[in-house]
Image (cartoon, rainbow, N blue to C red; front, side, top):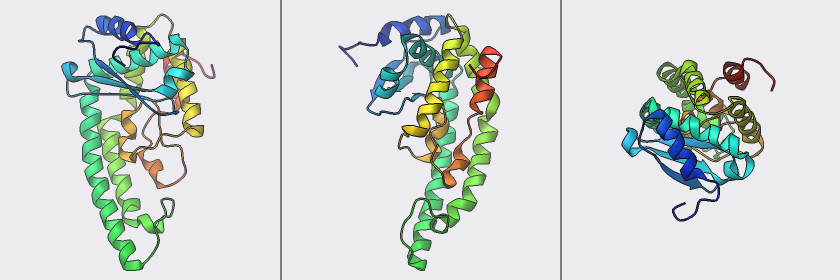
Length: 219
């Protein structure tokens, strides 16, 4: 978005980075109708925030600020590194299981169907192990702690609660196509379609997150 800043992203990110006392991260916009956001980077100096244009065009200015605040919190606590390492390890496990599924389909002569349990037998048994690894490494408390920190940097925590609620709702109607093992990187669970990938849904329930932010649910 260099040379273009219709959503006031530079100023918002700089203001929040100053509150967090970290270098201002780079901002990238992803072409997707699904309102989603992630933060990536090994450390403060290499951090990047990725926002979809669906998020920018759907949320209010206050809600966009709340989402950026959450990403800044991820960077501040270096959860970007933890999430990335966990995702990389899980992706390797997942790749090996997919390779096993491919070989098994060749032996059985079955056609590829992403929703068929029979065509993902190895992944079906390996995925719970990989998810257990993700839950032990990341866990529910990490997301809740990020919500709390992000809410402390904005004028009204209600905006973060509203943003999460909207993004959770849109995730079901406007899904984003990502590898399942990358799901923990996103601010809300992007895996809403039925199937075995539900094992990668490690985000806390939206009701718990909203109660943690503003003390009650629904909003």
